[in-house]
Length: 88
Image (cartoon, rainbow, N blue to C red):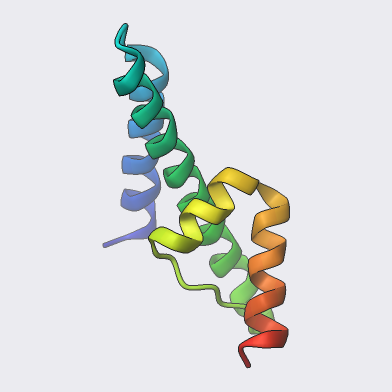
């Protein structure tokens, strides 16, 4: 799949979740968690796209996407440090 298609799908899902919303609290919480995981995957995608020039690669899976989505930029930096210095 092309990176443009992946970014387009993720962006449209994020916009849909932001605009549509839902009146049911449990569904809203699940939607927020899913949105954060997708944003985390997007963070990691950009890290891998731009960090590939420097030999930085963090795999994109549910665990790493959740960490980077919940913790944000510090989570991405932490995953990069772990991948670069501890797991190598």
